[in-house]
Length: 338
Image (cartoon, rainbow, N blue to C red; front, side, top):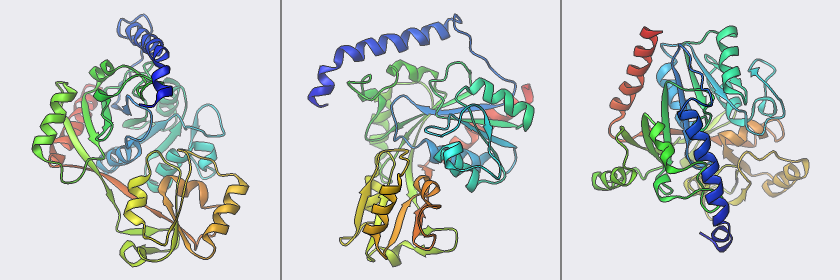
């Protein structure tokens, strides 16, 4: 915690009071929450950025879409559009936002929508596409909608129980918000995390709900729309690595060799023409490898044969079958009751 954040401590207390009051009003029904008669799963966090929401949404899509008609609903952070939009052939990252557009490109069998007003977004989806399940992306604090199932993500190296309210810490709301979670996933764990360390973290979190642990699995290939290359074959090749995501160090570490050029941008960054020119000049004739999220914003601006992305997946450690069954049981029960 740096000096400036310490000096802002009074504002953190004020912010915490405001968010706690808001939650109290929703909990007591003074502010109205709306629920729906289909399974609605909300994935989110208590802190700002970097907990792995996108890979977790994709995990749920892979789990559920073979047997159910799935729709995702996101705010569409930093999109250059407004209101409800259902992705179609004219969609791009500027219209939808980078993460929803990534879902749209990657999973053509699902519906992808964006709306800052999640209640309106759900109502529009129910009228227009009639999905069986709706996945709410980054909606843990969106209390206007009462989801049927909440998945709370917290990073292994930045647990919410060790954090404090903004701007002193990184929490969007107090740690008590975790009481809304039906399941907690500790993300971005080392793949070799021990049982003892898992139990220590569970005790520290202190919530009587299932707690799972996941790690980021990197693909062994990089891709563009034309071809794929083995990571082992290009690891020692001079290249440019580029990321505009929160906490990109593991991405760089997985691909980097001593001769690589690295460029880092803020999360959800929209690339200007001058930045694109700078990227091309620094890359020269070398290949450029970026994240999936950045690729959807860059692919129309850089030569397709030069730009590649590295896919990632969220993998549940040890108890994956139990996690999957928890989700499927909720969906089946909710569907029967609906």
